[in-house]
Image (cartoon, protein in one colour):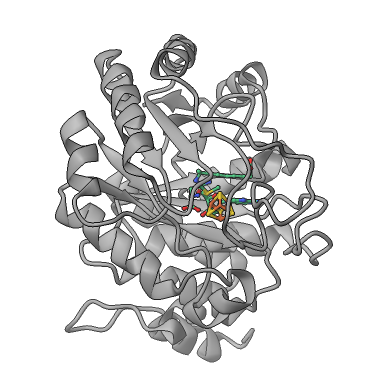
Length: 329
Ligand code: SAM
Ligand code: DTB
Ligand code: SF4
């Protein structure tokens, strides 16, 4: 690997297929295997071809329906079957949500993402969510929702109420998915993403790093995301937030360099997507976050809370952006 000739070969392997433009898992893994500085340099070059490197998009998250979820996702504190101290709350009203969105706008967020701890939405719940979306949109914010799996016709209803983005994560590589989630299949995730795309809603799809996966599996996740046609507009890369009571609590975390590599690899393979440095930022030193921005991350969750866990507070993020001369989009 360190021999110059070996490095050249690694560099050549780290490209998409010349005709199809698709990324093989091996080619993505070859990117991961590049020397750290070479990888970051390449990511920064790709980033600057498509984006202003000093601008970051700010999305604020709100959990509009917390806890009590029927699903079995090994990372998630909201699954009813794990004892994590997260209570089952009822769906917030549209008015309550719009009030929170107004504050997010005042703080400088450009997008407001509403999350619900559901396997998928029921029609009665969807009617309330549609009111939320219309109200948030009327504030001049971009709207995003993450409500689980969608049934036929639901994406169209969301679109018609003013939904700009739908978040639905692939979470990990296909071969690893069954170890993490037992109540649905990888193909169900792909199916919902297809429905979202078909309805003309922007796709936000990403995953989680640090669930005990191998580097090849991280490459497998990125290859899946990169080979979606068209590629997702937004790609959240989460570092697992370990919550006591979830099966993944106690998993060996990935080294910080590996997380930064993952951001860089996402940037190179998804050149026009917004790559979001997502969950796990509260646990990251500022220097690591700065390296993630150098590696091509250009979006963050902005606001004191993610869904049930913490996020750096707005004052701290403003100070960080000031130090790095980063402007919000
Ligand atoms: N219930 C819906 C679903 O699962 O699609 C939407 C909400 S769910 C909480 C949204 C995403 O949050 C998950 O797909 C997962 O990628 C991420 N997530 C959940 N718990 C996490 C954790 N502890 N650390 C990092 N990401 C997490
Ligand atoms: C995404 O990729 N990450 C966000 C958002 N999409 C919905 C959720 C992170 C959740 C972290 C754990 C929690 O706060 O419950
Ligand atoms: Fe439910 Fe979503 Fe958490 Fe899975 S990730 S348990 S579907 S809230």
